[in-house]
Amino acid sequence: MKKILAIVMAVAMVMALSVTSFAATYDVELSLDNLGYYGATESTNVTAVDGGLNSSEEALSVLLPVEVAYGETVTVTIKGSSDGGFRVWLLNGANTDSEIWLSSDQGFEGGDFEYTITLEMNDHDGHGDTVANALMFKGISYGTNLDNFTITSVTLVTEGEAVATTDDADEASEEVADSADSTDTASAETTTSTNADTGVILAVLPMAVAAAAVVASKRR
Image (tube, rainbow, N blue to C red; front, top):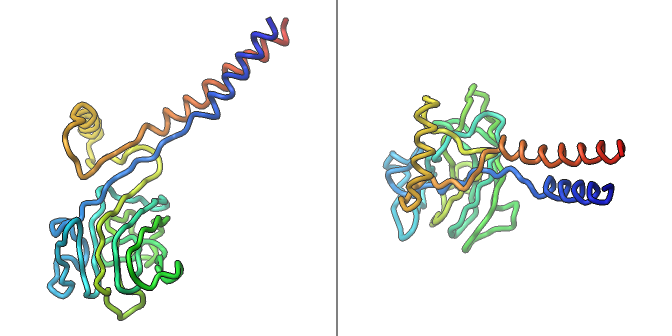
């Protein structure tokens, strides 16, 4: 009997190690209809190109499909090309809301690029922002323009479960359910997530089973 309980305990522990809490992944819309700060002004001269956006002016900013809350860390994967270096950070209006990432730190001087960046929403400018809602691209240093900068893909990965895009919790639940049922409907806000809380429960459950097996074996 003890051998059987030992096997059960081992299997339960393996199950616990294999359970993970998945994050939520979003594809950021790259279109002239989804430009953020500076995007609506004539001076930015942002143009639509095949598969993305291009600018050789001061800045190019795109709105995110979800808000990034204060203290939350997000992972951003960007793909494109540029004739020169550039900077990236989280934004709310005109306010910088994260540390600034520099392509020069990666030794980038020009050409095609693909980088995965980790940014934390920390109200960098100190304006009291509680959320960031856009991603900013600018020239490599203050006062410089982007240099034939083209962005073709931006993927955002947030912590935990998918973020509701409505203030009404009931409506948010219905939207998530409808999205799950309509798997053949294209969406700019594609999520490949599971509930982080459920992941934690699933991780604890096998451990509880293992503990019960240990207690049972000792009693015998």
